[in-house]
Amino acid sequence: MAKDTPLLWVTRELDAVGVPYSIEHGGRHAKVRFTVGEVTQLYVCSGNANAMRSKRNSRAGIRRMLRQLGVLDPEGSRG
Image (cartoon, rainbow, N blue to C red; front, side, top):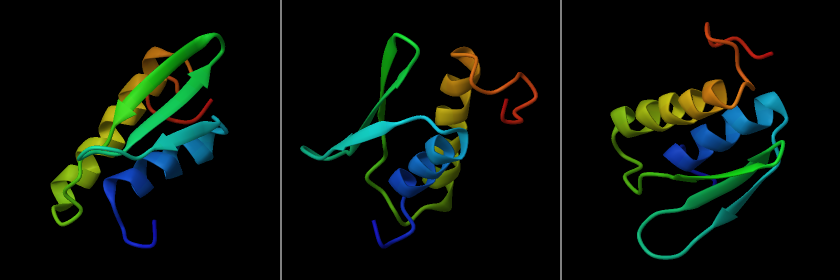
């Protein structure tokens, strides 16, 4: 993960809230598996590292999932 990729942006968000995760490589996309409470989630990261939009979309997607799981409050600050 030396390059600035969508996977890096997703793992930064999970690290920031202290959620443990594992990364699965295979196929075209990296998959991030994480557990909050008793709920295990899978987030599929875009393979396109060149577009800033894909990085921002990945960050928005993981934040959306964390809000739905109650890790982030509705305003997006870490709780």
